[in-house]
Amino acid sequence: MDRLVLPNPESNIAQVRHASKSADGRRGDCRYLHNKISSFQWKTICKSTFDSHINSFTFVYPGWHRASTALYSRHMTSTQSPAMHRLGPEVIPTRILTNVVKVIACSCIIALGAQLELKLPYTPVPITGQSLSVVIGSLLFGRKIALAGTATYLLEGASGLPVFSGGGAGLHHFAGPTGGYLLGFLPAAYAAGWAKDRGFTRSPIGVFITVIAASIPIFSLGVIRLWMIIGDLNTALSSGLYPFIAGDFMKALLASMLTPLASLNNRK
Image (cartoon, rainbow, N blue to C red; front, side, top):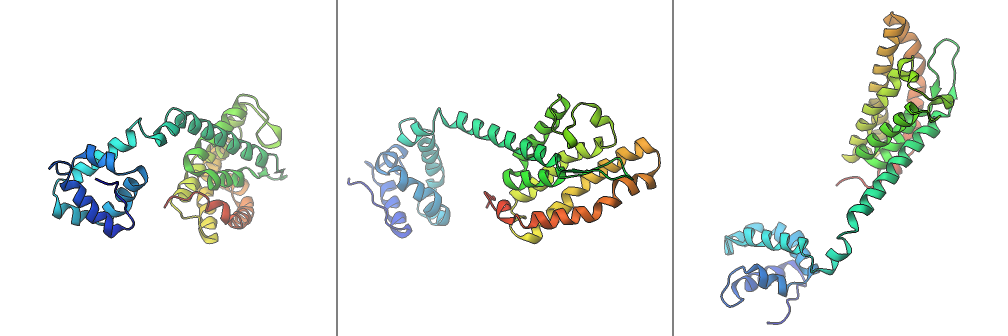
């Protein structure tokens, strides 16, 4: 039998039905189909024709779903395919290396933003670019890389690297008045990255809402930590929240201008 040619979905259906009834009387022989259908043709069948005409296949041949699933699994895991050789032993180390580079890049973005510091005379909490940098990292890399990058940044500062605001470093920063804000970066990175992964940040208004939402855990944990140190909730709010509301809205507006970054690699 000549090699199957699949020019369009309609002919795909007819030829696959014919192939499933052939092969010396073996209906749906996976090995026969594997030998007669090329890699590109089989992906076309599975990804477009099969998905869109599953009911037709099931009506003509009730066992088609089981046979095609087995054939697709065999094809994708076959070590005889040249594509599998290209994506085999090298794919996992390459992905790991890529993710490590992204995590380090995310931590560097936050560290650079932390160096943008403006101290206020009436509060122990300075204005920095850390929270905006956390959101930018989340918009670039998504929740998993952003969460790992933020955790890496915190570990770098705790281990003595001068990556905190004003070039600070050490574990004592977590016990100080800014410790709550530092810990709040973790849920903020996850929240902003989750919104990015779900496609909520494809528009400026989506980015704006994401930045405001990501600020909630930062200020919540920050104010709670200040409350524990100062002992008065109103004082903690006046020194750890109210002075930063206007600046946070400005950061959200600035981040909304970076909407093209948020639209990169969005999940469908």
